[in-house]
Image (tube, rainbow, N blue to C red; front, side):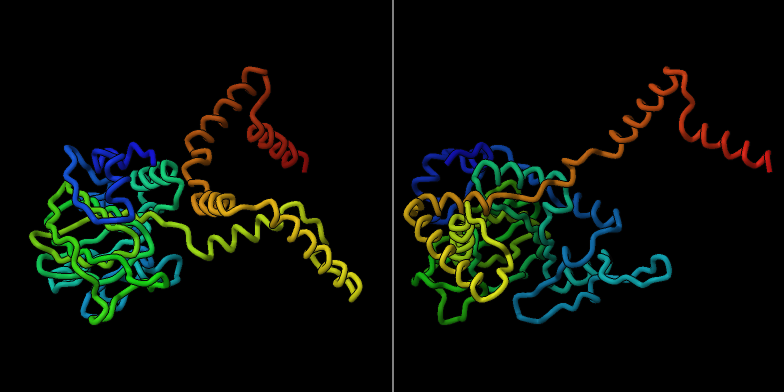
Length: 335
């Protein structure tokens, strides 16, 4: 594993890879750590006015559902009422009552977090997502649960106590909350301070309780290959080089398509090994949609238009809009 980003968090990356990665939870205290998203950035998101569901959610570990209208408000735009906009006053009131604020997919709407996620995803060759939690002291947002991802927690504010249990005892384990009688042995109990980093391996059950102040942390989830990823990759591998009509017409054509498909799959299977399939699934999983920021910015478009207008003027030609106005005025005069 080569990742300058992880090395900045865990220090000895080789030691981390050999002893902790997907084996044991651990807490790290890097010399400097700044979460790209913190409470100031959260306030800026509230001030911007566009934060809304489904990116925003309030949760409780006691299984009491917090309805969206308890922390959002409605707005009228062009005569139509739209729901789900974040209401900071309602959110703060719910935090004071012990609820936890959960922000989903922060990387999709906060550029510095998106840059971090993109960099980490490229370094590890895996899909990465970012979530932000704000929890009051003494409160717990989620019950003991398992995630289908390796998780790095960057503590941004306050203090939070983490309890991390052992890995699943069976291969076919389930995600989400654990029944009380299925809690595995406790491996780690630690209090995160601002600037601390916690690593939770994939599938290891965990929970967190606010320990002091208003606790806020950024969770970076690193997804690994699932059986569905392998199936999808295998289907794509087996389909390479296959040239068949999408809708064979008639029984004879369908029978021919069946025979051709089976022969092609048998031939392809002889060329695909387990490592080929693993790498193909990992590569497909790591692909991310092109970031919106990679498109030409409006400022760049404006400069191009300005440059084009300047070139037209230098060539002694009137800009199109001016020429159109002259033709329009001339037409009006001849009427």
